[in-house]
Length: 71
Image 1 (cartoon, rainbow, N blue to C red):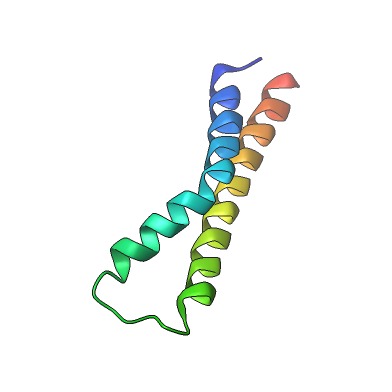
Image 2: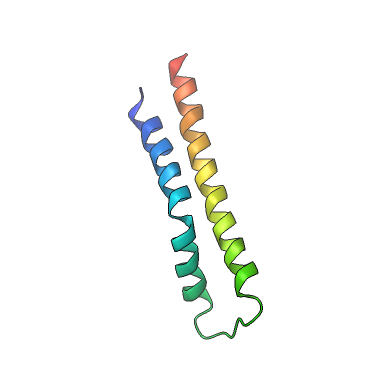
């Protein structure tokens, strides 16, 4: 098994698993001095889903690398 493929797969899984706490922290950092009374949940969901998408893309790069090197 290729070390680079394992790195991408594990990094993708880690990003997916920590996307929720990372999303909370990113919303708090980006919108530090803003009043988000009714908009907090949709903005938070956007951050979490974008981080999950990044994790899925990194994971799929690892799987593609593994399949390419297997041939």
